[in-house]
Image 1 (cartoon, rainbow, N blue to C red):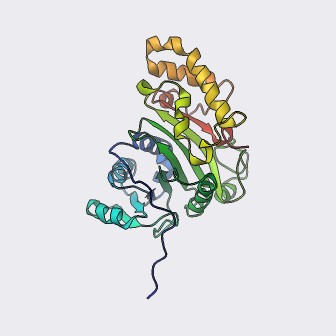
Image 2 (spheres, helix red, strand yellow; image 1 turned 45 degrees about the vertical axis):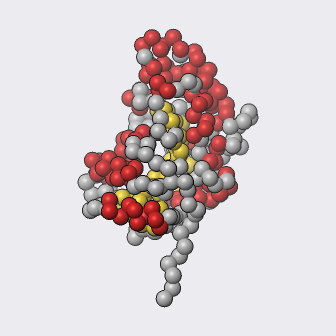
Image 3 (cartoon, rainbow, N blue to C red; image 1 turned 180 degrees about the horizontal axis):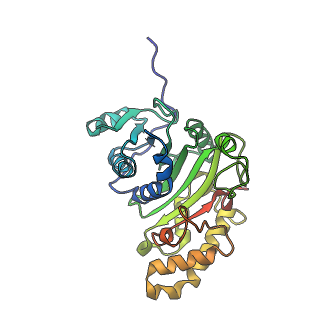
Length: 295
């Protein structure tokens, strides 16, 4: 009898907490809810759920509100964590052993992977993006990011398959969001980074560049002068300082004003579902990947 293939990846620290990923989940439901609703029985994978399955169960509940037939599979590389999660299974929610190979019975419509790649090298993170995007359903997306232990600061990248994007539409579209054109900083292969989103609990924010510590692994070492992501965060800090008088109307108004100032010189996405005042008031801002892509 042959052994099942060994899961791809290494065990993470596994730290998690209830509601840690609420900001990303809220964004996923709003932005990618239509994608899920186009499928009769969409499959979502929560990769690397950690020592507790609580955030996977929360994702399941939030997605079920958007689509009553969505199925969520929590995937972990540590057998003990999978065994501990099994009692939480119910119709539409399951847990299994695995890694970047995505051990599911059909390509997922969406993969959420948070705080998984922090311990990998930059090159390994790019390779993980390639591996995960290769396993997506047509038009499927990978949402990969990092957040603070409390979830108050987060950044994530949305990716798809470059081949799927070309097959879907050969016309020019919004650069760096989706479609056929290769965005700046893209590497040869399958993965197609499309957007980057920053989300923050505004009362705890000193300045936007505080989010640098939550940059994805493919960018965190690029936050140096001369790189796009460094220039973006520096410009955001300047906009935040300029918007300081708006604080008398509340931190939300200061953030919205800072984002509007940033949008004068940077390609902030300004229309729904990715942008606009409704999203900015939540302490979010989304830009095309080309705005931060490494040189």
